Each structure stands twice: as C-alpha cells, then as structure tokens.
Length: 610
Image (cartoon, rainbow, N blue to C red):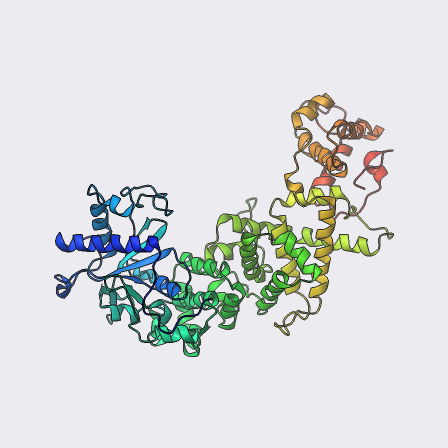
C-alpha cells in the first residue's frame, strides 16, 4: 500500500475525474441560477440558513483516502451542502436533458438502462436509483446512486445527527462539513475534496496524521460511534485489513463490548453484515480480518442465525480451521500446493474457502428433523447459519449443504484409498477405493462442487483433531497427516483424469440402451446407465459402447433358476432381482457396504465392482 505524502493537500485528478468535477460544478451553477422549491419527497428538510447559500460540492470518504494513497478508486461519494442527493440527482438529469449540454462532457444524455455509464467509453449517464433511509437498521440517510463514465456515484447531503430521549434513532438534519466529518466511521475516511476550491479538507484534524501513523481511529468517542451504527465495527475491521493499518486500542476495546455486539447482532440487517464480510474476504488480507473477528470475540455475533436458537455452541477453537486454510494458501510444501491446486483454483474458490472455514465449526450441530413425518428434512444447521447470518447466495448454501450431506462419504473414500495405498497387498472389505469407476461414480454423485466439499471436510477433520485447541498459532498435531492424506488422494484422482468426472458425457442414452437390449424403457434404465458409466470410467478413451451394452446384457442373462421362478409373471422391461441388487449396490452407499461373494450377485460371472 502506498504511503501518504505529508504535504498532500491537493489531488491530481484523472481526465475522467476532471470531466466529472466540471460536470458537477456546472450543474451546481445551473441550480444556483435556476432555483426550485425543495422537494417534499426527502426525509431531510433544508434549514432556513442554507436556503440562500451557494451550492458547494465535495468528494468524500474512501475516494479521498485512496487518492491520497495513490490508489485508483471507481466509487465516488459526492456530498452536497444544501440539497439531498435525490434533489441534486433530479436537477442533474434535468441539466443533461437540455440540448447541447451532454456534448460538453462527451456524453449523450441520461438513460434508464442499468448498463449506461458503466464504462468510460459508455457515453450515457446511468439512471438514478434512490436508496431510502431505514433508521431501524442504522441506515440513517437516503442516497441516490448513478453511473457516469465508468464511475459509481453516490449523491448525499452533508448531515448531522440529533437524538431525542425517547428514540434510539437519530434525526437526520443538514449539517456543516465539520458536523458531517465527525459522524463518520474513521478519521481516515472523514476527509473531503472540495470541488469548488480543489483542496483536501481534514475537519477532524486527525485524518492526515492517522494516515501517517497507519491507524484506524474513530472521530468521536468510540462507544458512541459504534452505538450510533454498530456496523462500523465491521467496517473498521475491513479498512484495517485492506489498508494494512492497526486499529486504535481504545476503539478496539469497544468493538468487543457486549452492548455493541448485541446491537450489531440484532439491529443491523444481515445483508449489510454480509456485504462487509464479503469485502473483507475478497480483500488483500482476509486472514487479518478474520483474526480481528476472532480476537474481538465476534464469531457468534457475525456467524450465527439471528432467527432461531439451534441449541448448539460452536467450538471455541475456530482459529484452527482458518489458520489451517491460511497455511494451505501460503505454504509451498507439496501437500499444501496439491490441495490448493485442486480445491482453491481461483479468486472465487479462495473467497468460498474463507467462508467454509468460518462455517465449518457448525458442522456438528444436531441434524434438523422433518417438520412432519414423511416430509423432507430442513437443510443442515451449517447451511442455515450461512444463509441467515450473512445472507450468502444459494450457490454457497448449496456447497455447504452438499458438504454436510457427503461429509462421511468423502472422508470414508479418502481414508479407504490411503489405507489401501499403505497396504496394497492386504485384502480390504468393500469396493476398491483406488479404482477409477468407484472414484468416478462417487465424484459424479457429489457433483461439480466436490472439490469445495472436500476442502470443507478437510478443515472439519483438522478442527476435530484431538489437540487442535491448544495452540492456535501452531499447526495442531496431526494436521500434516490430514493434509497429506488429501494430497495423495487428489494426486491419484488427477492421475486417473477423474477430477472432472461429474461432467463426463455418457457414451449412450437410455433410449439407445433400451433399443440395444430390445427392452422397453422403464425404471431400470437409470441404474443400468450407471453400469454403463462405470464401464466407461474403467475404459477411458473407448468410444464404442458395444462392450458396455454387453456387460448389461450379460448381467440380465445370468439369472439362476431360483431367480427365474421368482421373476415369473414379471412384466417385460422390469429387472430381475439379481440385476436390481447389482444396480442398487452401485447407487446406495456403495463405498461403505461390506464385500459380498461375487457369485451371489452374478452367478458364474464375477461383478466388476466386487
């Protein structure tokens, strides 16, 4: 991260920023010369002493901080001294609808399309989107967003907050720049760039100093700052981890205050919590952010279901899971690099892996029971916590649900593979866990997120090692063995070319198989196609399905006499009991059933899955 220059009081704008500045100043001049009555739609009323003042515009907050650090920013907050963001946005739209005005700035007017203004080459200004205030959720101020020349613009008025004795929510009023600055979350985010004077303004008197000291500090007394908006606790963590700054000790003390934690858990919408967490985990130092959450005892404040008590307390050694993940991501040891190359291939996987490390402590919560007999059971508690606590999207919940559903199967197959590798000549019960058909069919059952699921199970195993809570800074005893077991398994899967087995296209469909067997389609087809796929996995590269069809045909023809009698009267197209048993063996927990005598399954022909 770049370091602030001590004398930095002016900023060098890019060409796009210069164009935006000139546009906004021209709009302000247009408004001053063509005044209208204040809109009654706003929740914030214009005070009399500002009614005749000139419009003054300022870029605020993170954009100023990032510009001082030499970091490009595409998010620009514009503070207005005497209008709400919505009022100013309407006049901006009005100004750009005057013929000839858009062309002054290389624009083509205002569009309603959400795609307008999304890039510097897009010459239309995006539509206005009003975000209403919601004091009950600590969203105290209405804002208007739009897009201009690839920049995301937020329009909002300068404000101050006043409280009444009978309300915990502040009344929002127009304020001075000084009043606005001290109500912000951190001094480094409270500086303004005055568009009229082209100067940086530090009304808290601490912004420049704290950037020099690399400190995150609240402008006002920390307790009141967090009480006003508890989400600031997470915002300060995000800024500290993003900028590589430390949090002021007095602020950190109140970030873990029980009153503040309770307000954060109850008062703040979980969508806003989720947004802050996502920014942390996608930022440059997700480990640092998670360590702050852990050290401040915020785990259950952030990662718990506010809608229901699940009668379960997650283990206190959460650090074991995220520290293990950090070592996987950073270590150059062969086991870590193999796991990383398989399960954490890109930025999306990395983000998901941090979420998994945060949710895995909930894996041992009691399994939810169906609300009514015979109905589908609710999702695992871990999935519910992820959905309700931080509002993760469905695709993330699906990964967590699948991880929980397949946890024992994934761990079981991996362990059995390693056991067979250690003692290759020893007879092992059940299916051959090294065989391509066994592994491939399992991966197809687990689905396209199986690698993410395997990482979930890996972290779960490490979290539950016998001595995993004694020293969070050092790997627990046994972690290396767990990583090694997954590394060897992943290497074997790669060697067999089965990492993408879930996407393998069948050699033939059910219709073709039924025709080849001269058997009407029926319920038997799904399991029969599994037999074909298993054959396909054992014979990679073979594109002629003749032998696969023959394997199914042979299975049907090897009935013993007792089976023939038993099946007398069955409708054509239904499977014999022996063949049905074989197919069931393939599809119902095949990895954990004890081996059967092949002769009892296929008569004189040994099953390829025995």
